Image (cartoon, rainbow over all chains, first blue to last red; front, top):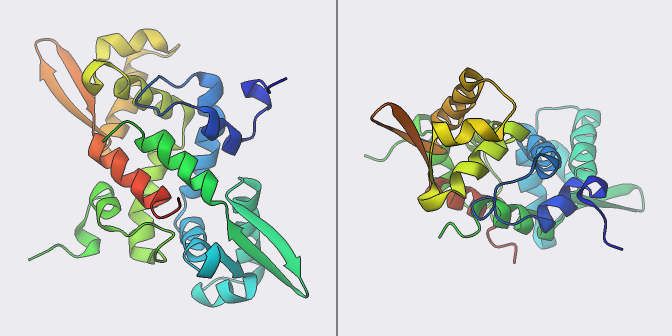
Length: 119
Length: 119
């Protein structure tokens, strides 16, 4: 049985929705999508996501990210956790380091939702 | 002479940036883009934008939008003003009514920024 919109994660909701210029979003769709956009509506989180996404293969070690920001390592780890929990980054542990990889499908679905049928 | 990134509006910054998976966003780019995303990171504003965008020709009279929300007309007008000031909606007055039209180019540029080079 397919999930109802209330059971979907924000990223799954984005993947299910028609582009917003094709059909009005329902309140049930708009709430999780707004929460996903909220994770991006912060300059540091946006730069972190961009830094991971533009790394080779869209993956970066947390040890590569610390130097780009004038922030403590725990603060950066907290921001990465927010992006992970929003469904925009995957993470894996290899040896002593945690690696983050961008979920390209999630970004592509969000792009389709915002820009689909607008060209 | 072309404008420096500090003089651009959020919508102009989005149009100028490489997709975030191609090149890391600079702090100067990330701040206005985050402020644009913030205008979308609210369920009511997102639904309002979608309602205007999916209307015939991507334009709607404020009189057509009030019925879709359980909100006062001044509250809806305030939200529309936020979307207009963010550069996502144009507005014109014809007769006694104000009409809002989605800026398709702004949404397409935002989609390219988020999803470009991810497929």
